[in-house]
Image 1 (cartoon, each protein chain N blue to C red):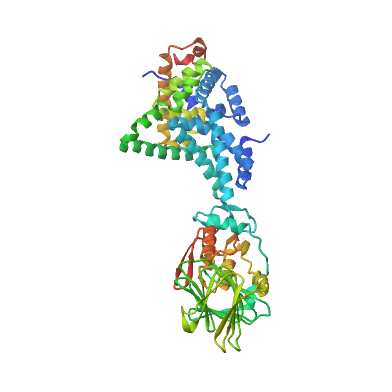
Image 2 (cartoon, each protein chain N blue to C red; image 1 turned 30 degrees about the vertical axis):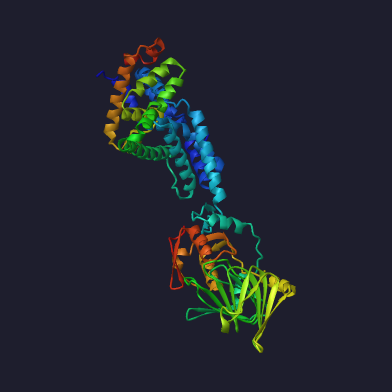
Length: 202
Length: 364
């Protein structure tokens, strides 16, 4: 059986040769990771969509010049982070310098993707509860939990992405988990199913 | 603050553990099965940690990802399709192993329209090297002198887009009018002119005692070296004809199919209707230098332009040696051709003292 890595490499090679199907496959493989991560960093759905779109168009246009990426997912996440941080800085600058737009920006922040999602969330109650427990963390805490548990990155990769040292990543994950535990124990919807899964929390 | 279970956290701090729970890779699975055999007392803790890690992962799946991802993909595809439609110039890096085509879109305004119309023209291909070898173009102190010493008619290209078919034995002399505000040529012999429109710069043909002034039109001129007689026959547009000795006096306006005959001995001009000779002139004019470059080294294109227009091209051969482009060029003026070619490789050009200087970076 081919390992995931080998499949990724052969996909990457045919993508570099201009194969549109390979490009579609790469998109399909990574778009969920990128959306999941992007939502944590960016409160505006349109900005997020635009940046992911740009990311893939740039990837396609520059494919011949791209080095062989060892871990494509990490490369994509890192590129998206760079784009979103820049977009967010620009957005914040607009809030500060452009009072006319204040109202619009406010509306945007309120209709944040993540809160929209929670509204639409009708699946299992415990996941919703854990989701909420994560969503009230600070932005950095949410990011580190996302990178570690959803994206499955190593501490070293996270350190590179978030521009902090290795030990600080470990410390940040630990303090974030403590907060999640605290949020969960104070949650009124702490069902028996959850108790089973998170018995160590209480 | 409450503390997190240190035992569980030790797993969360382990990259191998994270790889195991976030991927389905076989080798990770084997590793933890072996670990459990070695540490039977810690199995419960491991499985618990795994369950919590999975819950934490599940809780972060984006909820409306399906719709979003479809929307974004649609936009990406639209964008790429549009890009490819716009990319009328393709260039490929010169390398014997890898000749992948890289489509690029020229960003110079106005080029798009010009190029798309060029693209659909059909080109009569003749051997380019042959065509240029037989017509000699000499640069004489900033003047260009084209002499057709061949038994066939040959095309001369002027920088403004004008094409002149020189009949055997004919010669054409003109200044390099890259930066001049007038377009003036001196004709000896027979030639068919297709003058590019440029309202701000009238085109003058000096043929013995006769001067023709045009803005943009096509016409045939016949001159007789021995007796100095001149015949002008108009195909399209308007041509003003007057004697060089009496500028702006006794001006004749010729419209399509009209002609004049100037007799040197009597210095008389006779106007008449005729289209018999025109067809002959027209068929002659269809023989063209092939500017439809396909996968051609840019250095070859530069020297082809140099030959065709008699304009000195200055560039670093080393820098451009690996640039291979496909550029379906045809009737556009010299500078338009330059723009298209330079856009294909991201190079820049400037004109100084009637010479062209091209600068750019090496192609991979």
